Image (cartoon, rainbow over all chains, first blue to last red; front, top):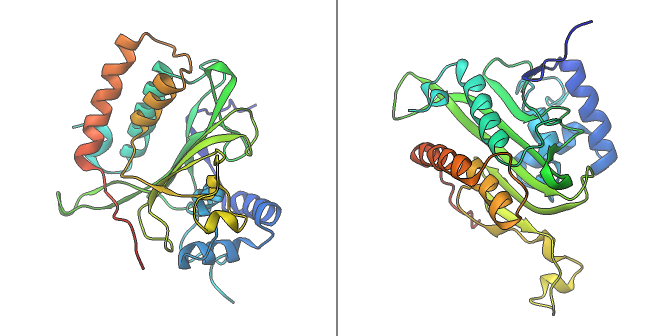
Length: 70
Length: 200
């Protein structure tokens, strides 16, 4: 069994997207794409209340399919 | 110069080590708390946060908690052209009374880039007015929703606030942790980005 690394956690894209999908719907009742779009254009009502999700989304690439409109 | 200011990928771990040291000297519940780098798909971006983030806050002494995250990246600096140094994209800190996201007492938040009409560095305080002030607070908005603008507040300043004002027990004597915080504060203020308030 691999020992828990308390200094570094490496997130895969799928892990990040999974948490974002669950938490943005639960806390904001919106999709992660909507949250990031609203954050970037300044219309998110209380960015500080979801600062953890913003920081998690920050770990993805800017051109991640999650953020690029189809 | 502090090691985290040297630039390059090693800056992420150097900054984590520094934060781990000053949290350990002060209010972190050492038996349960860990400061961890969160690495995603981009080499030059990381977030520093507690172990278990984003679900879990950092356990502090005195049965309190700190929810925090510091989103970092490597970027250009005018002071050293060609060198990529550590910069903070955004950060947030919230003192919690329990392991529960709704139990916050105060919040400090900073955004490097403007996001709407809000001050880029600000505090929220959970409190109630003794009597109504202004029309906004008559429209269902509460005092805790008010963003009190401030300049940059460093991690040492947050730790000092928790130890001195909230009197959360520290792991080491004041004579030990206070000089350490002052040194880290001094290094930080030399390079800290200071946001201006936005008035669009």
